[in-house]
Image 1 (cartoon, rainbow, N blue to C red):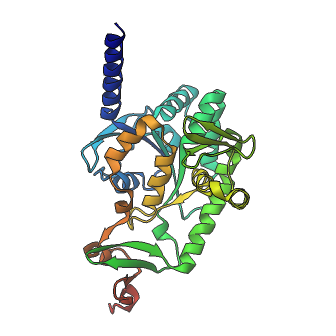
Image 2 (image 1 turned 45 degrees about the horizontal axis):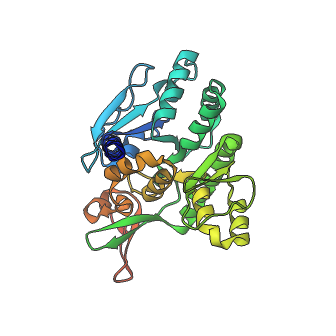
Image 3 (image 1 turned 90 degrees about the vertical axis):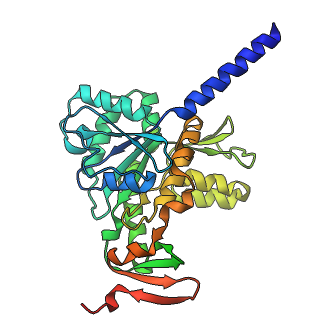
Length: 329
């Protein structure tokens, strides 16, 4: 009898695992018109959404089902009443909140060439006001704030590091400093405002021992209650160097990620943060969708000349091979 029960239990577990792996990955994206939501999703997941595919004309969240580059189904949810209307009524807010909490991934996109967070903060405040404590923590913990279109920031140039037939983009030192300042501003003005609802989580790979009561260890994961700022992360790492990797990952969950879909810049960093945040039950499905994280930033050399004001640097030969500004029009 015990053996039969054991076999039945194993079979149930096997079916449950198979069913979980076959479910589509669900991704919610929030943002106003013009922030590049479709382009960001295409760049991240290898999909072919047309501009406007994730912008339903009604206030009801509607799914867009597509196949990722590796063939696994992805369901995208746009929150039209959040991104386009500051006057969405309460019944829609409750609907949005439910959908956002249920999704595996929540990306909140803002245009990098902006300093205004008032509208987006008002929207998130209204969502949280309609939620209970558990839902608030679940939503805030899932949100990854993304600054899009950083390739549009000045001054140029961007550098393309060429490796045979492809390579990757990186900003010049001056531009990198400006991008970093943008990220710091939006973190302080937006994310840090919701510190009381933050629960940052990462895997425990070092036998983590909580240094204070802000930390919890749960089923192989480390949880930090609050918004872990850069200075505090550095202080903790100096005091407990054996746990520096955990502190660094928890800090990553609290940062603003700067991206360019056109240059595929910052996408690997964004995916790493998302992987760190998702539930264990979704991790297998996420892996099926994205493949190797490091490949997401590769750009073919043939695509580079149309990309804008850039410098191409040949890593193998250690020399500049192309500067857009040198081209005689």
